[in-house]
Image (tube, rainbow, N blue to C red):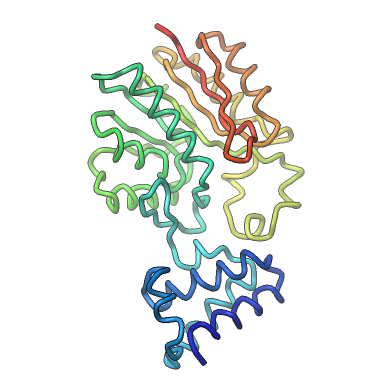
Length: 290
């Protein structure tokens, strides 16, 4: 059996076990790259080589895990974000491409407001550390901090900071939302968050990869999905001063409600709604002009 034949058989096996056809083919290729320790282009160069028989047992184990609904990223333990490598475990959400757009907008607006400054950034609910680590790499003069209620998530995020060479540039706090910043009287210039925003009643209907394997703690946003936005905006009142820039990722259809929360908060002169690549209103940003 050639490597190509193994890939085709794997794709067919995954499809037969409930993995969508396009995702099954991509999963088979990705798992093969992991198994063989090669890149995608190298995989295709080796397409007609014989599949290594000594790897058969391990290969079958990887496929069984994917067939059971486990995401490829958890199986291989990694996911790229903004061109950077990140380790992921079942303690954290898998970073999504749409969150890259939030990071991009925060960098654009932050650089414009503090062209020579060192704003203090707080990522609330940092998970894998994708947002704060990326900001630390791309905006090295900035002071980057992050918090998460999960100690396991904090550990993953710390490892990712080290992996990307910014282990000494990101301060991590274990705690619930802004409680550490409030207690320590830390003034935040830029607050960014991709909090849980799935409505509690919708959790049972998520695709199995998410429902069965990603942490519910990072998904469940309460009855209407807006609990954490309300809590964060409410806690802003307890900080030494409101952040000049606040940016949220939101679920589909939630942007108007989150934008209204920021308007009611009264601290931001301009509210910006940013669509994702599918045209869905995905990010809500509040900006103070002075």
